[in-house]
Length: 366
Image (cartoon, rainbow, N blue to C red; front, top):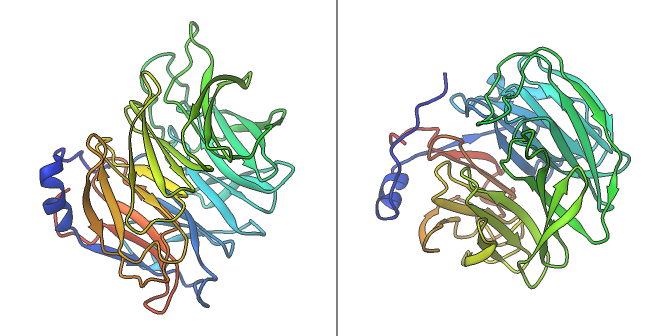
């Protein structure tokens, strides 16, 4: 059963209440030499009962956040190179997608611990995004090619309007690689809007960050460019929509996170961590009020993870990560319905690195 949604915290109360939470560490037995087990990607499932981590050493693991021992986790094996991205189907809470530089996207049933589909996308895959209705999975290759994958789940029909429902069924789905779409410029992270297709509005919107400092808003399946956001002075690396869809966060190599209003595509403000460094990941709290970024560069983890209040841009709290100045924070991910924050750290002289979850060890009722 999913945990109940907690009281929404104001900017003034956030630091005190969030500061009461304790951090739980998760130690993977695969982590041996420093740097060999860098967790590059983190994803919660829709109910927040499971969390997936993908590592540079090919380790793909599913954790129960309530039980930190590795014996209570699941090791999913099959990729032959580092894991670049993991992401759960937003409407099927046991269906996980992963991509790797081995050139494959794999779909996993995390309850049966099996790979249900292996898809060769024709090159090194490093990004994934899932449409809100779970019918399209978009893979991005390092040669700036986008590869759509259709997902047909006959056992879990999607309503024609309204929010998608989460299914716990494990009935098989059908996955099919569609024609690929090379992009004319460097293309980094992607995300779909929260739009659910209807007969009167059948197209999806795909947002893609580029090496030119822009974000392209594309119509899917045509890949026609609808808007171009001139977001940063250098490469845009990461992107995330608030759960409400009102704001879009874009992380850049200029160490900034820009916050855009999706109603008029105007940048409302920018925020930046004191630690600086390229922002390779961004994540919103479930209520869309708070945001933080990830940076895997040396020194980015020195003072911890800064959390910002989206409406004002103020820094409201810094999570003490326990790392030294040589540590980085490769990935961050807020829980889908609680003020819990998962993050990964790189190994340094202060510790082995790995997964941490603020809130999982108790200390408060958020």
